[in-house]
Image 1 (tube, rainbow, N blue to C red):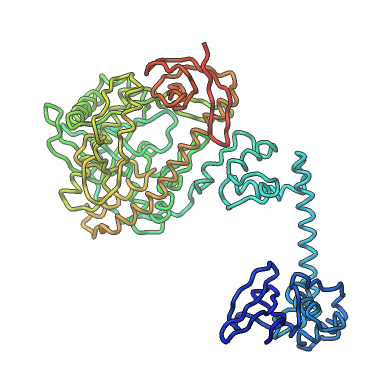
Image 2: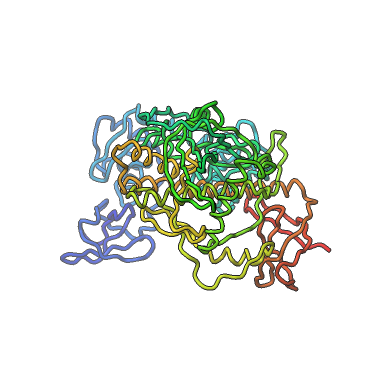
Length: 606
């Protein structure tokens, strides 16, 4: 190798400059110099070569040379002379450019291979198809920018829809249109082009939620000895329309009972069905539908009150004359359950057994207050897309019967956790650290103070180590009362099935593994539900542009006030120069609704 020879460096032509014992200076087409090792470069032509920027090979048809060289392995010099008629730095570079960039030749400077006629035909076919596809794409984009969508082009729109659903990392349509890459922009464009309508809810798919009910086979667990409790009246109290009743209450002979659907009888620990349930983690409650964690057969067979006699895991509380709990036990049972609504139960609170159950749960509620329970009361609504496609947003009914059922479920979770702790049964405990600092004073109806209180609350945590749940005012707590629709509850029930039947328990590591797995999915379930609820609120407002309502001032920010809209259970900010006192009620109206960005702007009205 000598100065001014033409060499190849990282697929770029270079001119050799000064040569030393261990380094060679090369001059690159961009004008830069670089010192390299001899093994880093490969000679193409001995030179002399001048400016490598001037290496512009003449036009030539290589097909005749390709035909002549069939079955041979030519050198770069042979190829250059056959194609261009001479071997110079320019034609040497031209010959190199024929390798791997054209259909006829492939290989390296030192080993050139001549492709067969079949290989060339296949490459040309692929290149032709690629060119035609690119031409169709260009035509599609031209039409799309005019707002025209031809039937034959609808397949191209998958690119935009997959990105809007966050099932791909980017969108070629957005790129070629010069728009910023974001799922929101993709959603916005789909609405603009009338490919989606504003009701299309992308959030479950964005969070990778399943689209339908599971169909995995159930597994019959080893039967356990059951206590016959069918002589007691038991009541599953739910909202009207509830389809998965998994808890019921009863009282007889000084014992209050909470009966829970025995999901572990069809989903035993460690089986295929258990793994399938864990992957879903929980029911997905959307305004437009409910996507269950378990197959419909499980609910039909185990839902309390759906069959004449139901298998259950029953939690018994021995109650004294002061309505305090004196004893607690857990048993697998058979129960006979009647289903009633919260409204029906409300009208029967003066009757037995509701009257006594209410007194017991009130007593438990008082104990939680003494233990420092924090009661965060903020507006709640139920959102439902009805069969006629109307969107119904209604406040949650404030029933005492609802509070009674909620307290009985908390009692069950608390006493179950104590039982597990005292008997060294590994389960997932739910804990919550105490808030730091002085809590704001709260009173019923003071939304601003509730809004401030929420900021002090810390996230609950799941652990195999028992600890207090400060928000509930409980020394220890676990979720155990919803095994048809929440995997963590099912896991607790599976563990008690093993314990009560004298079999080997799930280890702490097993519980940790199951908890970690379902918690990651549960986070996506919660996010999907939260975003879907907001989506349908915004759709409702978009379809009712004349909506007006009342908002309560709950906070202040720079040039804005923070308000809570009780009828929508919606928190938002409104620009306002003069900031009224907290808890002031103001009248507002819809200004603009932005569904892709999940934003709505309200304006104040007189």
